Image (cartoon, rainbow, N blue to C red; front, side, top):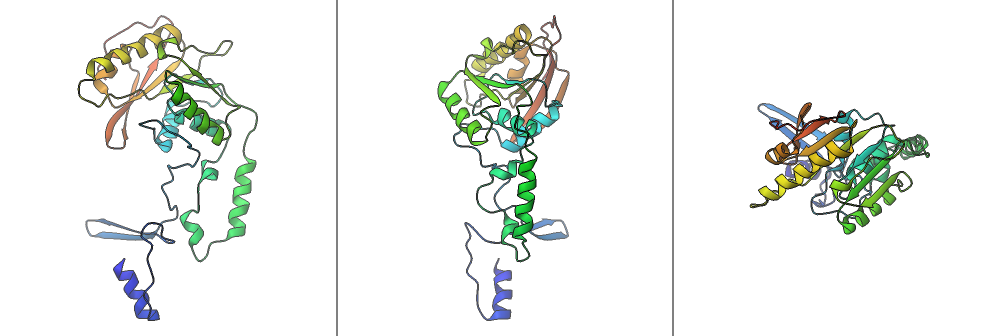
Length: 275
């Protein structure tokens, strides 16, 4: 920063003021061994902050990570997608954006970084925004539904879904994961959920019981589905008791996680896999 300010002062005789909290132009410096890359930040605020969140629970899932889980699942954007422990409904909201072809950048609050560049073309940018809006599909494309045991959390989820313009596309209900059911009259689809990790000391037994309940519900109620459990508690995940067909290593912030895939064939038997 000081080097850039010194250049301005040397060339103009004046020192520019710097807003360290909300700068007009952000410059990134990356150093790796003997290489240095100096670049302009085109984004501004982190792009994972979509802008539709009105309320969250204690540990909301990063929006970009949620979208990544959906893409990794191979969901076809037509089959039912369910989240029986949906929290603030980030996975469901991102699935809705994907299925309805809604550009997440349209919810961005404030300016993108490039809008402060000297060569920014406001007319072209508005044209691109209108083209993105025109891509939206209004008619719901897939059955999307989520549930959670906490009514307060479901209220928060409903606020977020409405802010994203998806209240006609996503169904919510208050229920325990053990009571979750697939939609009637629909072919089997995909379950994607992010259960608690239980990071506090003394929660091991509670987490084991929760993950066993998840496994029992999957086995009993969702035969024919593919289930994807995203967790940072690999020990508790063993209590699910179903055969893991795929393990995808990911990070949730600093937490080492796995996206575990279960193919819920009819008559699936419990096993004791290593997570």
